[in-house]
Length: 256
Image 1 (tube, one colour):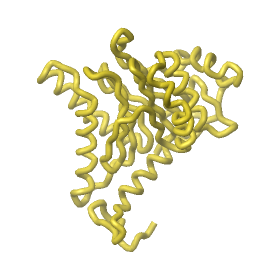
Image 2: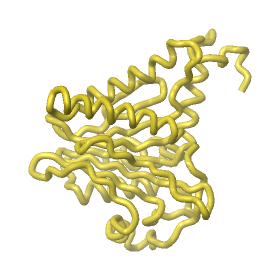
Image 3: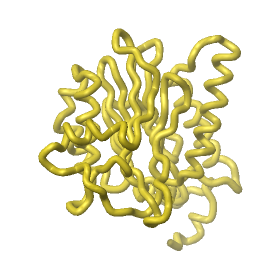
Image 4: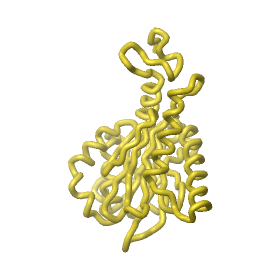
């Protein structure tokens, strides 16, 4: 890991123009369990694969509701995600108290991007070692944003981050044209199939290791809801009815 002293802090560029601590933070995201996000004209869906350190431990929480109209899915350091999610909750509450309206997703995403980027400007701080998918609805419709440890944020139609996420992204790219016109149930099934693509052959999606976050707008309006456990049993059965995906899976390592 030694980089000729250019990785001792996050404010020093290497001769190649790289900030190694930011790259290390991005590696932490790549080692977290995979999360997937998709948006259509009416809905935004998050799907996440949870991990547990051992059979005796609980599964790591991967999807967090921030406000009634949006939530986040995390990959990487869960402790850093907790800090950022608390900041996002404070900003969303301040918007409702001050302006009596929910916060725009583009605005809250820009604010956490600015907060993360400051850590690459001030000596003694480090980048957040977590990537986030921010999904929800506002006055302009459903949205999905990706947040990276460098502070880069971008709006996406569909996205996957975390370990083996490239396989999930490949599925999303193959089916990209279907997402815009999909209804709630179709979007959930696409998210679960993309999540399944990232698993190794001996792993399955189960009610224990899978989480879903769903929010809708317009005629299909619904607040952000988190589905876990037996609530997702029917979706797993209808999506993978020929694959026996609801059998009990093996434990995995928790996110860092």
